[in-house]
Image (cartoon, rainbow, N blue to C red; front, side, top):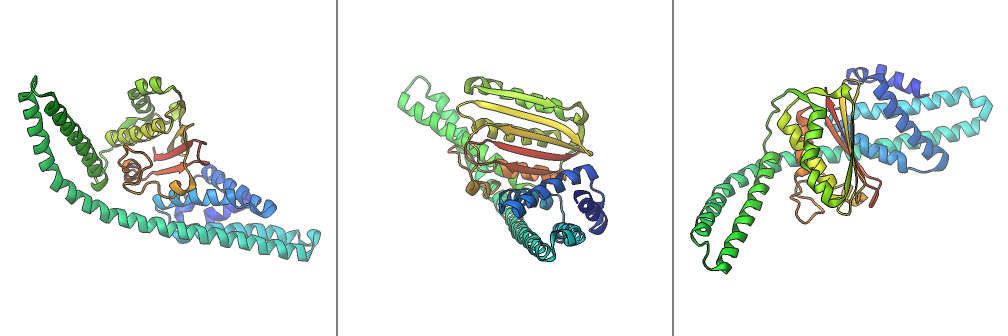
Length: 344
């Protein structure tokens, strides 16, 4: 049935689905099929709902039309019902009709949930575009006065060295806070600007190793073990090295902050049908369902020192590279896994 479903998806929907590598599509379809099996056999919607949540973000970022994905789910119903029709004499007409009704309910549930998520994400994307324009204007207005405050404070601090310690400490606080605000404005600038990537050949594995090395001292202090499993097949790809470095820095920083008491950071890279996949997994605090729905919203953060822009910037970088970023966590205390898909 999975083979038949994949065949229908590749031949009956659109060119975009026809071009998807069969092996990749088989993996996605198998995951959905197993989710449906849990619904039909056990009445448990957990796995299919998790699949819908994950696939919605990936399909929206990859530019798939809503109607195409709806059709893919409908083809599941057609495939399974066709199979049942052939077995109706063996299982009985009444049981067959009951199963058909349950399958149709599953497909309807999937399409309704997917459509609602898809629309919400599309509206969020539109709001982010407007917010980005506003943030660019605000950043421009604040940046110059802030530089003046920081510059004058440094000059006064230099002139007062060795004098009143209380005034010196206050000036140092002013300078530290100005620096913090300047870093915040840099994040806003990265979020607000649609800077096209300056693509060139990049050694992805080397970049992962270098960026991971930046955190070596933090890993030692926090008791974090690092496992790198990097496939040589996906070493080289065409991307903006600065944007990719920023992306990896944000993700590893998030993973490190999620393990304040230590743990394990695992980073895996491999090539899957002309797309480089990178998985960044931590064994940290995990993410609740409530927080998961808000992830990527600008200025939303669960951390005291966070700006709430890191993941928004990561999503923008992946969109600019025609890639995707998906986040998964089984809940608080269960860790988090981020998966990047980057065209090679």
